[in-house]
Image (tube, rainbow, N blue to C red; front, side):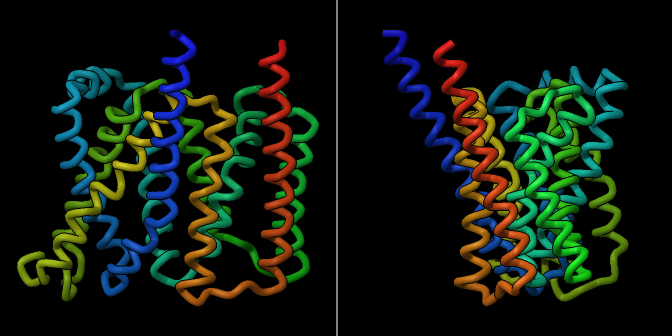
Length: 301
């Protein structure tokens, strides 16, 4: 009976994981519909409506008291203030990269992210690198180094997305705060900045929602759902699946971005992209193989 329940929970976990990473992977389609709006303006709307959506979720899931409890902890709030800045930067850069035809580099950033996470664990959490993990990180660094040395080009968008999100995850390991209260507080920290920007920014054709078409306003209002729904699915999956399984499914997101960029939005791969992506994909194969072997070894033990 217990095995049956566990199997059902794993099936639910796979469903939630697939939902999360598919939504993250096709998110560029949504942002491409807002290409006529400045990235900072979209980010402002994203923060404001994320707060609204998260408050509604907190009320319905009875988690508002958890948010209030965190607000009484200065040390946790300080960490969340830093993570909020990282999150706002990551959101803004992702929107800008998608709407300025740098989706390939954005997908590269999310391919690199798991490897950066491993490196962060080694550097800041005293986690030991297994040999194949070290090889995977070395292969990723080799790909980036070849692009920098041979082509004089730094994949700044990819590295910025990967590193900012890795540090964001690292800070959350230090806070031990549940995702909904944590994301709500981070969004609340960013909210005054977003409102001030909305008030004092140079007026644009879309800055006043009263002048927008109904379809544009609907798209902007949807920013809160686009921001939080994948995260809720990811949280539900993380509670039900082993980290290794979740790691394999994670590659759906950047893979979908890659396909969208090349097949639908006209971005092309040059020699430097082939070399860099080739090294990263090889690194991920080594990393995934090591993770699978480690999981099977633990099961046998």
